[in-house]
Length: 451
Image (tube, rainbow, N blue to C red):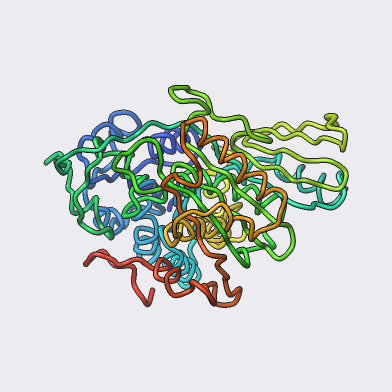
């Protein structure tokens, strides 16, 4: 790093990486010095669009070894995030890594260890953390206590998506793509989806579903503004969901509903990728913003989402509005400032914070993956009004698609308990759940036991 110029290498050249390149290229002192992707076509497009002089690498290990690169921006598939970050920090580079931080809890823990051992700056891409509005919200809720005590909270992620289809024969990968490098730590399994790129999100081998894709943003807002990061992980988790209607090659749920016992404020999250009505293009109507959160308080309720928020009194009257932005550019600037100052404490989403928020998503996915056949009667084991209402909403939502919630192909977990010290499951159902805390890696792309 010379004259405060930070020479950046981009690992992954897809859509989100392109957004990052566009943002970083507008920040003084940031240079797009190298780009990397197992798809040569994406490398060529990135160089043409953002930095013709940038070096191009197919193998991220060559970029990481490049002594002229100061920091990396990782926007590869989820299953690559942690290993790429660890390798980069071992090579003395700082890291901006997209959300969700990890594909499994254990590798997130290893990434934190690497950041601390090598004294690296590691920012996670929950960019709304850099929106100045968040500080105003926390002051309003916690210092002014304008709505009184927070009693419960709800998180929403309702966004319509389409089926990814289902092939009768495995998808053939374009020979121009280095599939071995793309696959990296993931297992080599046949893919039966129609498209290679992006739809890896809905395969647990490479992605984290909508919970890890968008749920991490709204759950991070919850942890930030409702709990002020005082709750790393919930104490208990109970959830249901399924992949219904589409009959496609995806594995992750397109309807997902989860209860988090935090030991203080109870939290639920509702998620759906289905429209409110068959063939429609709008999500079902739900309380609060479709992508956001609600704090139910003694004196009213607070509704927050990306870029805005509103406070209502007990009679439902609007008493205050908040206006913000997505945090884009501010988050990248925050990263660069911390890099130049060599101070990870300056980060708005330090790797530990990003790990904790990602953890709620990983646990929610584990609840789904370990679930048994859904029973509405079993949902009554949680007597929290927001949970009861959410289950009833899901029942109506599925009914609109001619599905009976008790007969649809849904799963429901046991009540799973997490030990706050070890951050592992204990008690009933623990053995099955803990198997998902660390994935099986494909050599030589293995997250190291000793970083």
